[in-house]
Length: 330
Ligand SMILES: [Mn+2]
Image (cartoon, rainbow, N blue to C red; front, side, top):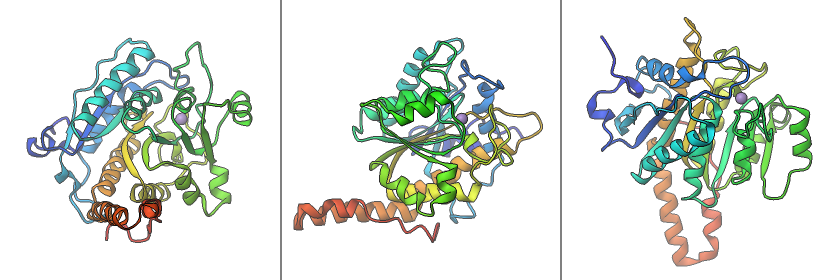
């Protein structure tokens, strides 16, 4: 049977815009990729794979799709220069935010992340970006463009603090930049070596992020044995359970406002990467809308109200308490 073309292959009841809590925005944009081409087909491959996932989440014991997941039309960005694309993606994501829904952007090359970050920054002045990637993406310019997919973290960190996690490939120029970060730019790095060496890395990342966090996931942050379908696969990446555990703790501790999953470059007859991307998104949405997190949010709101009444000075402690991530989905 032909599945409907929306994330998770949902019926109208669960994919309609009005009642959906989540809106998936496919951004099939590819203009500046440097090595292997094909990310333009990424969004369609994720959506295609997502229709074949089990809609019951066995880790969380819940049917996450019941929150309602709408999928917009694929944005039409053929031939647009990156600056124009950034504007269009920003507008599309702003519409989703204004409707009070949680946006999930599907790339496309990593440049598609610049627009959503700009949209959220207008609403959350304290916004920070959790940037998961094998590459530092901190070049000022590449192949004549400041919006090349190798420059994305550099553009974002000029306006919004960035914390990079899982990185393991950089140029001399990027190293020099990190040794002498200009005032006005803010970026912190947790490379794979930091992760291997420091048992406290997850807590340290959480401490560096502000309350309101946007998550950008370049699929090449995973080990290429797990996700071979990326344009520039780098050995020695992060594992599935490791990344899920980390993102669970971030989601429970922070206010994650939106996310993207980018740089999938589908390979013919090798659907494992497409499937992983789909399941990753579904699982993270599951964390975001799990009863445990929702009740925690309620409790935080209540704590804040109570503490305001009692003593306004104790508010910070309530907002920044630890995550307790050992019992996911219970
Ligand atoms: Mn990358």
